[in-house]
Length: 184
View 1 (tube, helix red, strand yellow):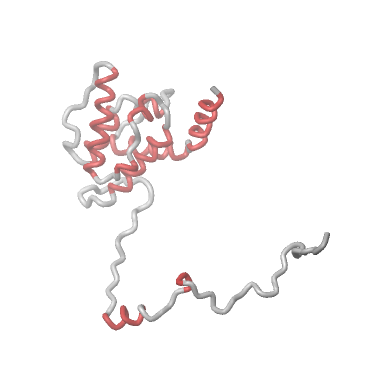
View 2 (view 1 turned 60 degrees about the vertical axis):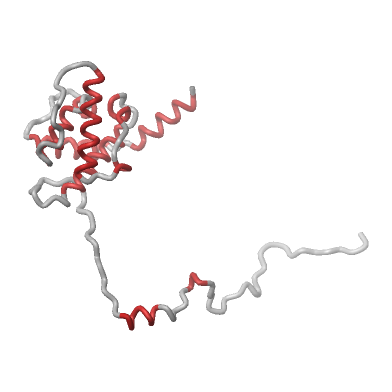
């Protein structure tokens, strides 16, 4: 039982309340509605309805049917539909949380990281005029080299290629030297 407790504690340490708050405020701004007072951030988004509405605001029609009522399987279907929609929107699969991370509250930090990934992906969509979440991803910095510059680069031997510019270990004594005593 102590291993499970240790794992839960480690996951809980990953969670950053400031990031949760920032993600919540971003969602509230986009949807134009505040989360209910006294309801925890993870409890309000648990059924996936808010998340589906979020992606539908960013990319209209991404989630065709949002289940507003029904059992837990209908709510988990919302989460799965949201996950598919954000991958289509441009969020990398590695940045998408697992359904149990949200539904069973196993790793809310991972859920928040996914929301930040959506915020980063929104920069890549010129039809979205903001607000944005998180830092803007770097654009490609393509460089064009002439054939002469490329040929000159082939003659340079980098330090990682095995050259150490004459450095040796001569004269270095660390600790006591090895003594071989004959006849003892």
